[in-house]
Amino acid sequence: MIKNVLKDEIVNQFPNIFSKVLTINFFDENFITQVKQKKETSLQGILTDDIQNVHYKDKFDSLHYTTLGKEGLPFEDNSFTLIIGENILSDCFSLAQTIHELHRVLKNDGILITAEPNVQYYRHVLKLLQGTWDETLEEGKTRFHFFTPSSLASLLNNSSFLIRVLSPIETDSTDSFPLSEDGFVHINRYHIGPLSQEEHRIFLIKRFLTVASKATGGNSR
Image (cartoon, rainbow, N blue to C red):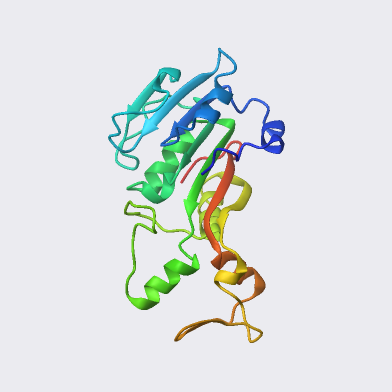
């Protein structure tokens, strides 16, 4: 889902982003090829599931099976210029420990990129109203933590990270969840609102991308 997120503006803003890379449950061929264009690049991988057949594992300097939020990351302080993954924070056991470890192993000019599901996505809201709440958020695995874009931004900003990019990467059209002139969304017997245009936009986001940098001189809390 995040294989195309490293657009020119991000790479240009952080030119050393690919020098020391940690991927967490993210093994996209195009991304790995892009990273390994420079032979001196260090590429490490973390798996949070016991996946036996990791694609392109010969490209990695090391791969580790780690339970985020229960175990520390097996790396020294200030090891990586880029940490990239999917569901890093929604899947971990302890948010505080996971954020601390990400902050610890990230260099001062390093970048954290994660794609997370939006708990406020309208299909999740409807399931909650109908009493059929699904903690997998339609992704096939139980989530431990749930975020909206703004709540995750606040969490990271309060944990010595600086939000650089916060944008949707999976969004439904307004036809799926239309906003009426009265400011409500009417779906069968449910009437959700009143919603502002911005609140309506957030309800259409299924997954969102967060790009954050380590705050210089900060300590994770």
